Length: 88
Image (cartoon, rainbow, N blue to C red; front, side, top):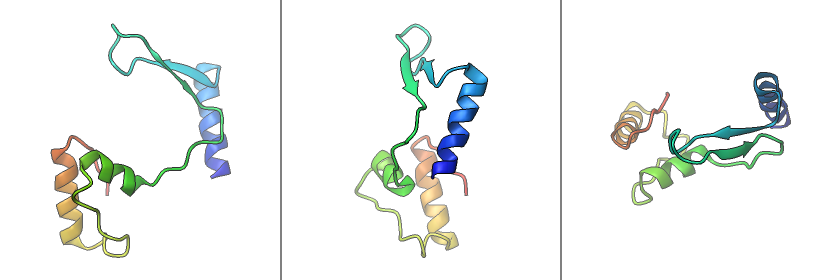
């Protein structure tokens, strides 16, 4: 995790010259949001966050069952229907 923090920090600093950038999340007409890339970053669970986004009533399968084709296709379709790009 530490190495990933340093890579992200170095990349942002190299591109923008600073560790804080302004991002127009709601479009160019709205006020920008400042994003601070100074580590440490909050750790999140990808599957838990996807479950929240697509609705908690339908849980993702355990990681050891997720690689089966039926489960992959079921969840891929659910994510695509909810406007998510889900890379396998």
